[in-house]
Image (tube, rainbow, N blue to C red; front, side):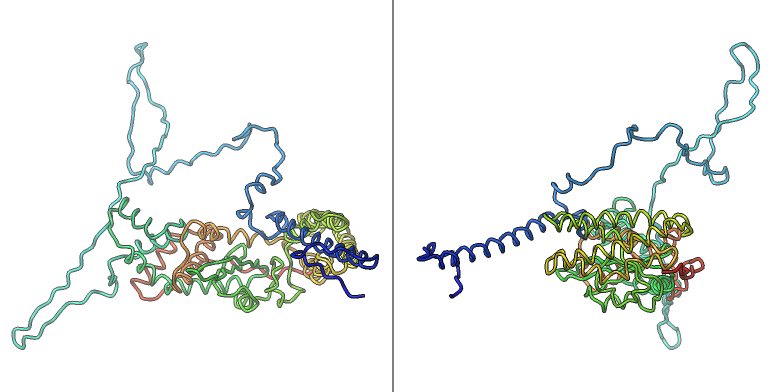
Amino acid sequence: MSKLVIDLSQPAPVPQNLEEAQQLIAALWQLLAELQKRQAELEEQLNTHSENSSTPPSQDSPKQRAERPSKKPTGRAKGAQPGHDKHERALLDASAVDRIEHYYPQSQCACGGEVVMDGYRRHQVFDLPEVRYQVVEHRCYSGCCRQCKARHRAALPDDVPSGQMGPGLIAWISLLNSQYHLSLRQIESLLAEQWQLDFSLGAISEAQAPVIDWLLPVYQQIGDQVRDAGVAHADETSHFRGKSRYWLWSLSTPQAAYFMTHYSRGKQAARELLGDFDGILVTDRHGAYNDYDADRHQYCWAHIIRNLEKISGRSGQAGEDGTYLLRLARLVVHCGKRWQHSGCQSLLYRRRLQRLRQHFQATLERTATTHGDTRTGHACRKLLRDSPRLWTFLKYQGVPMTNNAAEQSLRPYVIWRKISFFTQSHRGNQFRPMMLSLIETCKRLKVNVYQTLRTVCWQGVMEGHVSFRLPFPALACLPSASGA
């Protein structure tokens, strides 16, 4: 009995006997099963959004944004609540005030008595002065020897910039282009509007070229600081140079954030990012980090929950199993936070986490066996392979369960990428990660970004080398082991 092949471009076949009819029914049934499977895959793709995948929220459709779960209303009115702590601007000391105006009441009261002053009320008004650029003209004279007629010309001192822009202006342009996401054309307009400075786009672009060399020692210091930390978060996002796709990688701690651009999103780039880092690494489930020691590698439970959200949205038994796994994962996060908030001293929550770990593992094994060679089965088997990286937070105290810190460090760049042009050169690929590293690290250290950048540019212009280094606190040691 030959296998019946259905060709939909031909007229419908007419079975001549019972055997042919049975063959036709079997072929149609197989075709229907394949179509249903394909339909389920397409529906899952349509239902993929930021809540059940790694897709960023900005790529959700208007319908998906409208269907996002909203926070429960608190019933309180908007704005400040009764009894809240009052926040007022602190008055400056009299020595820091530019001018003091005195106002006195009438010397005599309406009743005829003399008014004796016994105090005053302070009211300070802040305003911006009119700004104007400062120009210093350097005149280099020349002369001729009366005897041999040789010409002699004075040279500029070493501490005078050879270009037309000083360190303050270079630092300001670099900061506007990076932290404040202004394009070169917008910077050109702002300089002309506020400072009455007319520089071409080319001059503004070239002013940032030496900043890369000046920032290099500080950039390397940030990288060394991050790689020496006990716990670090890693993540990556797309980056474009013209029409070519690159990747911006981030390795961050509470004290510093280090960025680099790379043409790859693979393991080679991850190894370059990590360097000699040997602490606890927290990441999402991206496979580029899987060469790192599983005993010191923590996966983000928020990403695990998103993956289980996708499974729970499927129909039939797969959806039911996914919903149960999702409930277990949320219990793990809830108990894990309670355990960590107790300083990892609560034996009650630790025992609960151990039971949840065993139950989660057993449920994954059962679900993987039940669903076999399906998307749900493959997803469960992958989670089983990743199991050692799910529970590192139980081995070492103080290890976060999510990778939110890395995503927050990348957020300023994602905004920058959306509202400005892509980089157009190798120099741009160097400038962005260096400036991002400096800005985000200064924020964490509560250091003034502009003053730091101005100091770096001043040393680069005036001294030819940069000796400035960021004031990092003492490094935290590796988290202590708390048992498996």
